[in-house]
Amino acid sequence: MGTLLYCIRQGIKNIGRKIWISLVSTASISACIFLFCLFFAVIANVRYIVRNAEAQVAVSAFFDAGTTEEEILAVKGQIEQRPEVREVTYISADAAWENFQKEYFKDNEELAKGFANDNPLANSASCEIHLNSIEAQSGFVAWLQEVPGVRKVNYSMDTAAGLIRFNKLISAASAVIIGILLAVSVFLISNTISTAAAFRKDENRIMRLIGATNFMIRAPFVVEGILIGLAGAVIPLTICYFMYRQAVQILLEKFNILSSIVDFLPVEAIFPTMAAVALALGVGIGFIGSFFTIRKHLKV
Image (cartoon, rainbow, N blue to C red; front, side, top):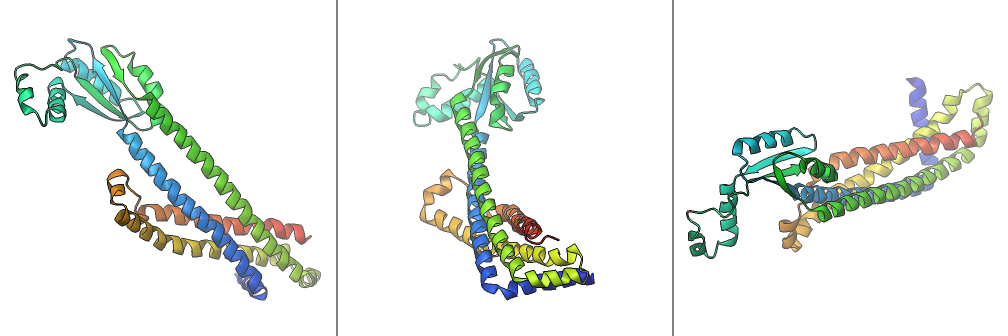
């Protein structure tokens, strides 16, 4: 415990000895993690909006003429057992006709009375199917088209393909930007630790001569890197927490139409994950940057 406390104290002293360099490194890492948090918030909301759009994309299965309701419900049971299926809704012919009237005859109810004793959609019973993932649509539709009793499957391949491409684009952009931010942050930490190693070169040599272990010499530098990385994460997280809440509120107030088109993730839903990732990045960057840099500069 005493050794650990010594290393922590020395790490803090290292920061104080070159406070301006440490502040510049902290500010630079804060800027990188701030950009990461902004990017994370944007991507999380885009994915949320895309998931909501995917949830609205449905596959509709229509059945052969003469298929009984019991047979349709049996097929519905098969569909529900598929792992890619999230929800299946059975729409009877009567319900389909009722929905049609509400949509197309809402301003001309007199026209609908001409069909009072007749259902033009008598053979239009269907199952409306929502999938867990839009990527599964192609394979699911191929299976559904082969199910006995199913005469037609309605689905939007263009919409599915567009959403899939957009998801891939988001994933690729995320990987590239996060990679760049990580590389820049590690480079900044490395420079700070290199300066600290040069600053304490003679002191470290003396410590080695009097029997100090590798851990005793290296650990303060690692602690320094971790503290700088941690501070570089806490600062932007605090800013982003309040800024995100305010930004969403302003967007919804200034652009009322947005509230009817898209839903934004509340800060309570997005911040815990963002905070965990940002803190892990800050500590990880500080540890990796300092650990490997000190091994290079101190041949101990």
